[in-house]
Image 1 (cartoon, rainbow, N blue to C red):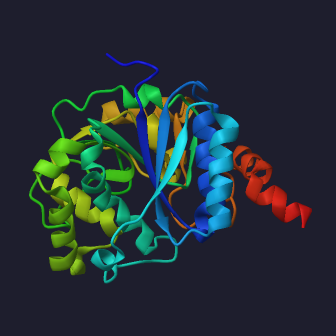
Image 2: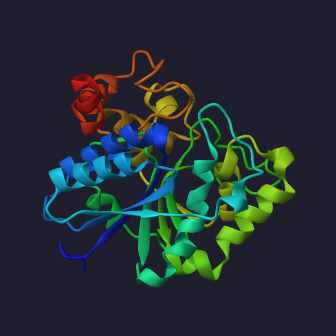
Length: 284
């Protein structure tokens, strides 16, 4: 069903400050897949400089024969009035528009991955998984499992983290998820704490397939800060801690600023310091 020639679309986003960290995500993703695997990065460009774009292009070409990178503009006016915080900028909202922007590319599915991640597995092992008829696949957010009630949603479904998502493009657009998410953000701003992630959960509840937590090992999950909602998830959390596939540095604390005691910080910082962004700084 799948072949090396099938293009795997990976959507992500960055502003100028996040460009070096995005390079680590790209490096770690390509370092764990075949150099012949056809991967196309779609980077939502929030005022990235030309030098930063050139460095990201060099990073992709250095680690892969077949991967490419493309920078995409999103209509910022759609999101200018929505909540931001110290570690979540307006850039985070732009992913909501991507399934519409990529509608003409004939992708059945697209992968969205946050820039503040470290990839430890072949991303194709995630991409080839099915969605069981759901619009997206995602991983539970351990600190917000019961947050749908806060959002005004009457459902026993769990709440997902939007930092790693697989999206069925046709279903997303058929169901007008982009517009519904923007509408929710506009009408229910008083309920929003976790930005676009809250709105996506309010719109996509009961329409997402849970992936194994190893594919989005958030900081709170790795540190066991929140109890699992049931025994099955308790086992899945434990497996994820032992064999993570994607490390997601959620929250304000990151390896490059104030994060302490994280088992993958050193590996992350090694890759960051080896990046073209840091090498040029060190030369200067």
